[in-house]
Image 1 (cartoon, rainbow, N blue to C red):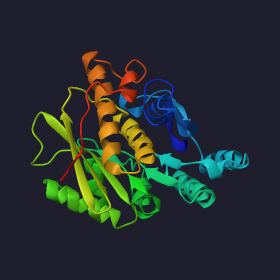
Image 2 (image 1 turned 180 degrees about the vertical axis):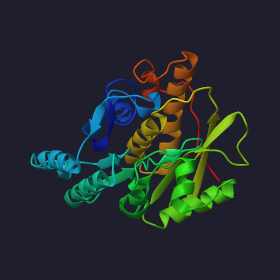
Image 3 (image 1 turned 30 degrees about the vertical axis):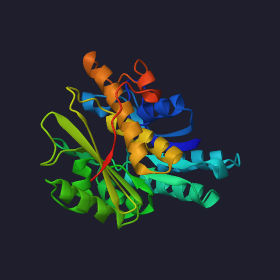
Image 4 (image 1 turned 60 degrees about the vertical axis):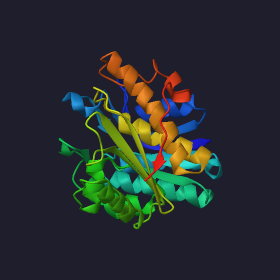
Length: 282
């Protein structure tokens, strides 16, 4: 399995490609990483060093990969945080280039826009680009609840409303929508939900709520879900496998009170989760 991953990179910690690349490799995928930013650490620390890559640089790197004659063997494109709308255009162009070489390839877009309690934290123009260009181009999108509300212009308080919003997003192009960090009237106080929508059906997965707020969990989940969706061909088993693995990593991270995801220390959870959770039709 070959995956072209266009995301941010941090030298310290695990967000963007630094959260997606190792899990994918540990599961056996080859990852062709193109870094949209190169930072010392994620911006949640309040201070960082580094720079954002230019759109031309990203296009040049993708062209260099294409020159190796390997795009026909690329199974999927994964994208996450975008440093600007111009970078978004380079990412979507890269996905189109891969799909032209391999029509069976999937484009998985993690539409990083913001989060509950933080609001929109991407640069001006990025959220609009996601809505108008990235979402319609994608086969799979993995918004959190805040991002689903932002992209659909809907307030979501119930499971029925979440399902309707996911279906509305599907109507704009993606065949599969995974909603992460989902809390509705049906979610117990000590749990967190995820919802997958595909082929007119919906599957819900619930895991215990852990005392951890690790940056990069959404990035890792998007990568894990894409891998297992490619392998199984269906959203429900992909959700079960990915969520079980991520829960194991988060559980280890919470137990250690670690400031960053313990992806390396908890790597066995990626391939053989201690606790397995099953997505059920809803």
